[in-house]
Each structure stands twice: as structure tokens, then as C-alpha cells.
Length: 127
Image (cartoon, rainbow, N blue to C red):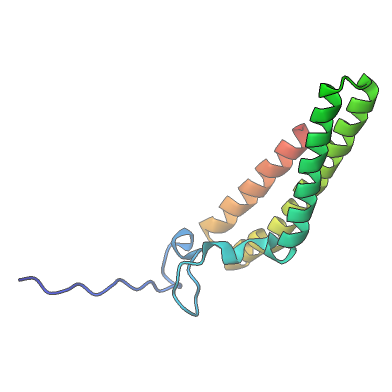
């Protein structure tokens, strides 16, 4: 009969930063979502996204009702601008929280977060 194996503990000072990124230091619990920078503005983002969803339904209705092309394009432009505002807010939150925290901690996680932010900016610029 084998002895029970004690759960492994992770020393944050010596562990891989990616492995401890989602562990709450107070409880040791896996807390992946507590570190997302947007959580303090989550309700605002959800409200904006619901409004955008309504705009998309309105555009569908306009097409279905064969409204004037320019009026539809105007609504698409407004919806696109609203999505860009959500994207910019999320990017700002990501940089202010996730990237800043990773850079302060140093190590490979900092490089990963900076690369993610750079790639996200590039995608937004291309869109």
C-alpha cells in the first residue's frame, strides 16, 4: 500500500510566472479571472456590448426592410465606432493592469504580455 502524496506547493519566488499567474496568493486557489484589468468596468462594457447588439439587430431590420443604402452604411459606421471604443477600453485596461503587473514582476511573463499588447494594437490598427 502506497502512502498518500501531499499536494505540491508552489513557491512564487522560484516558480514559472506563467504557472502562478492565476493563483490567488492569499488562498492558493486558482483565480484566473481576478486579474483581468477590465473587471472593474465589466458592467459598463456589457452595457455597451448590449447596445451594439441592438444596433446590429437594427441594421439587420434595415436591410430586411430594404432601407436606403447610405442610411444602413451610416448605422454600420456608428456600430463600428462603438466596437472600436470597447476595444480601446479593453486594451487600455489590459495595459494598465495585466502588462504593468507582468513588467513589474519581470521574467518571461513580461515579454509575453508586451507581445500580446503589441499584437492587439497591430490588429486594431489594421481593422
